[in-house]
Amino acid sequence: MSLVLAADNREYPRLQAFMDRACERAGCPRGERSRVQLVIEELFSNTVKYGRRDAAPVSVSVSVEFGGEEPMTVRYEDDAPKHDAFDQSGVADELKVSVTKRRVGGLGIVLIRKLGKNVQYEWSGGKNRVTFSVAADAPWPRRPK
Image (cartoon, rainbow, N blue to C red; front, side):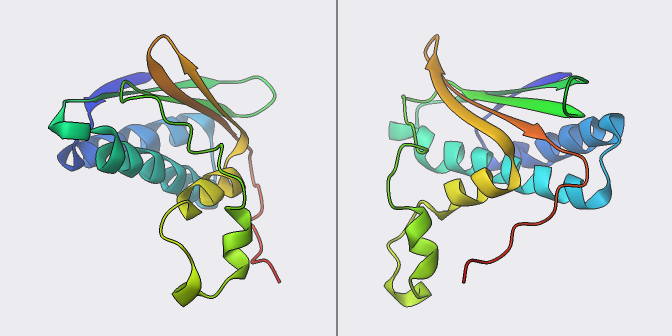
């Protein structure tokens, strides 16, 4: 399954419906569907917010493969300027700091890493690409102590 759309908030309902169909096809339970939607929403909102520099149009492509070791593997690509948000040291430590003292940004990447499985970033063919697997019945991550 695949979908191509503009990096525009008005397109989010189409993306959400596409991911719902993919999760249904993969047989993901409701909790897993919520995790997938959170990861996709975070990736898409980052593209919309940061990828459209100088209001240049950016396209997003999402493809889903079924089977293999996991019920579903998702590949999210955009043609925004290269940006490896996953290459930020110390972001996980931000969770230990009180909300009023945290720096802005970066926590969405922690969320993606915690909710997705086998999360990988690469820059290829002029596109940012994030790939993650969806594991059946994966437990919700615990809050750090």
